[in-house]
Each structure stands twice: as C-alpha cells, then as structure tokens.
Length: 208
Image (cartoon, rainbow, N blue to C red):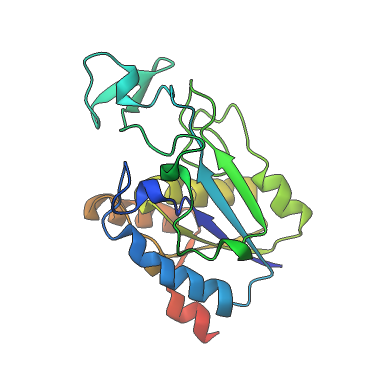
C-alpha cells in the first residue's frame, strides 16, 4: 500500500493567512497532480486545529510578540501568531486543494498546553494521534510526505513516521513543500535524510 500524507495545506499557512509560508500556495497544483497521477492507494492529510486560547499563541502571553521565544508547560516554545483556530477560515484547507480525494484527516494541536508540529504526536511525545494506527491498519508500506512547513510540521511528521512506523519506507517530496527560511529547510532536509527519509521530487514520483 502506497500512501500520500499532506501536512497542513491550510489557508493559515498560505499567503493571506495568519502564519503564511512564502509561496505556500504554489505547492497546491503540484500536490493535486500527485494525487491524480501518483498511483497512491490512499491520501491522508493533517490539519492544525487549535482552540482559540492555545498556549503557543503569543496572544496568550502578556507582553509577548509573535515569534518571541517563550515557554509552554515549562518548556521552550516559539510563540506564534493566532492561527488555524478551530472552525475559522484560517484553519480550512486551501480552496484549490483536491480535498475530495482525501481518505483520512488527522486534526492536531487541540491541547492548549502543548504544541503539535507532527501529525503523529504532540511535541512532548506524551500523546499520540490516530494517524500511525490508521496507516498500520491500512497496511501502508510506502509513505510520501509533503506540505507546510518543511522546517517544522513536515520535518517532525517525517521523523515520527520513521520512528513510529519502522517498517514503512518514508519519502519527503521536496518541491511539493515549502519552508519558513532557507537555512531551516536545508537543516530539516539533512536531518530527515540522516534519519532514513528519502528525498525525492514530484517529477521522480510521476516518472515511476
């Protein structure tokens, strides 16, 4: 079973959103082509789904500004702008994304006391989502991952896929992803490669 995992391709992370990734919307046509022509048996997607009082928001820390370093539950935490709040347009998938093709949606980031970059578990690893169990139940053997942002949620999802699904071949699709800054993207790709994640492009996948 070959699966495609789309990470947080939401309005909030695209231009015009509350926490935009530069050119984040430009991956949508690439992702749609992968969905249509990539010979995937199933498509899963993660969705940041924060309560409006999430502790990772700078607005919940008096005197703090977005992107300051603060703490959350006693641990260092980047303080983000309010983003992807449950039930708001910011949290919706990008309007051009082929959502009808998505077989499973994993919402994350609902616990206000801990942030959740990975689609598989919270940042403190104390709570897991249902994604790994779903992929095991579907007998997935190959998992391609892409989305937003490379240096945060995509990277941590890929690393957790390797750790939690050790028998699954995991690949990161570089051109179907965008990151926050070039240095962070380069470091994320190196970290993923060192963990055993293959780095591929959509052209390679579609040529198979």
